[in-house]
Image 1: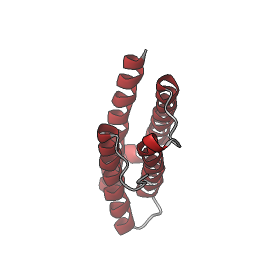
Image 2: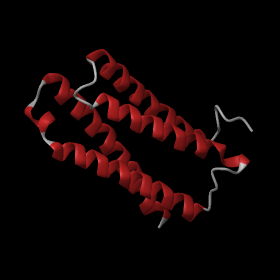
Image 3: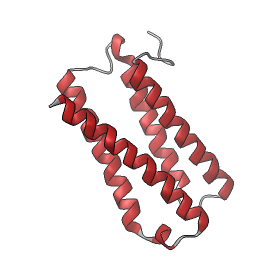
Length: 128
């Protein structure tokens, strides 16, 4: 069960990041697919499924993010919230172009930070 949840979680993360990059490119290049709400709905549901699978993995592994040895997971949760906020800003049509590029770069930075936390399992900001 763990293997299935883990691989589904990682696959959906890859799909979400690729879809975010493609959506941002479409929006900046004026592609006709940028106006279709179906892609935003797919991205939203992908993010929700990633969160659901993450919670399922936490339950299966019995990890408490508030326990001192698992502060890395609490940092990861906060980083995911930061990523989701920046994705929303980057893909909002009424946001200024400069702010969109900054939010896009910031969202990708959060993805790298989340990946580093997931692989090292060592808290960086919340030192216990």
